[in-house]
Image 1: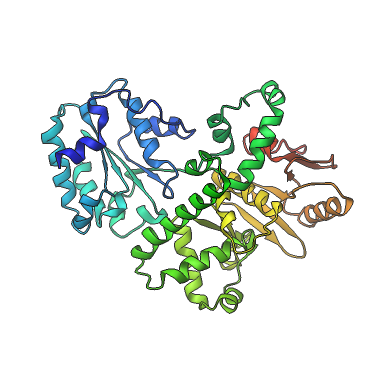
Image 2: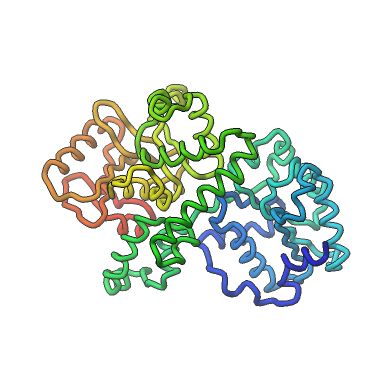
Length: 428
C-alpha cells in the first residue's frame, strides 16, 4: 500500500513535480473553491484532463500548504479493483495515508480522490468524513449521474460541481503558443489562427489528440478514447451483454450528428430495437460522449416530449462515423454547439416550417459554413424572420466568410469565440 500511495503523491518530496502540466481556463474557478466547506466535484469524460486539473490545484496549494497535508489517490489502480464493492476500504486507504505521510492533523487535509465512481457507495465514506472540518474533499468522476444516485442524496447541498471539457479553441491556441489576446495579436497571427481553426474543426480538443501530428494516429487515438468510454465505463456499469451492438450504434449516430433523432427509423436501419437505442444514447450522454437538445416550446412538458437533436461533445469523434463524406457544415455546427452548451445548458433548437439551429438566452443562432451565394443568404434570413415573434436577436456564424446583412450579426467562428462566445447584436 505505501508504495502505491507514494507513487500518486510525488509532491511530498518534489514540490515542482507538476510544473510542466498544461494550464486550463477552469483552474481559477476550481482554486477559488478550495477554501469553501463543500466537496469539489470535477466531472467529465475520460481523458479530458480532470486529473491534470486536480494536480494543478495541488500545485496552487503547495504555495502555502504543507505538502503532506495534500493527499491524491487514483482509484483506477488495479490494486484497488478487488475492493470496489467495499466502500469501507476507502477508510483503510485514508488511514494508510495518515500513517505513511504523518500530516499535521491540526491543519486542514486536502483529500483528492480520482475516478471515485469506481467504488460503490463512495458517498457514505465522504459523508462520514465530511463532518470533520479538517478534511476538504476534491473528487473526480466520469459520468454525469455521479451526484444523482440514491446514495449521493446524502451529499445534497454539500457539493460544488465543475464540469471539465476538452480543450477549448482558446486553450488550444495557448497550447500551440499562438498569441490571440488582443486585436493586434490576432491580426499579426492571422495565418496561424486560420491554420489552427482548420485543425480544431476536424480534430477537436482532446489533449491526447492535439499533441499528435500524424493524422492516422490522431484518428486511432480518438477511436481509443471513445471505445474506452464505451467498453470500460458504459458496458460494465450498465451490464450490457452485447458490447459490439452499442459500439456500432455509436459509430452510426456519429454520422448523423446535428440531426433530429428518430428512434424508430434508427431501429429499422441498424436492426436494434428502438427501446435499446434510446437507452444506449442515454448512456452515451451520461458518460459525456454526446448531448441531446430539445425543440423549444413555451410549455416545458411539450419541450421535454419533443424530438431531440444529437451532438458530439468533441469534434474529434466526428471522424469515427461510417459516413466518410461528413461535411464541414456539420463540423462547424457541432463546434458552435460545444461553445454554446458550455455557456448555457438551457440550449434548444427551433423547428416549424423553418428551422433555427440554436436558441439560447433569447438569441437565435444559425450556422452556415460560408455565405458565398444568394440562395444561402435568403435561406438564413427567412429562417430568422419566421421566428421573429420569439426573438429579433439574430446571430449568424460562419467559418471564414461573411456578408453584411441588415439586422443580423454575422461573425466567423473565431470572432465569435474571441468575443466570449457571443454576438454583439445591433438591437441590444
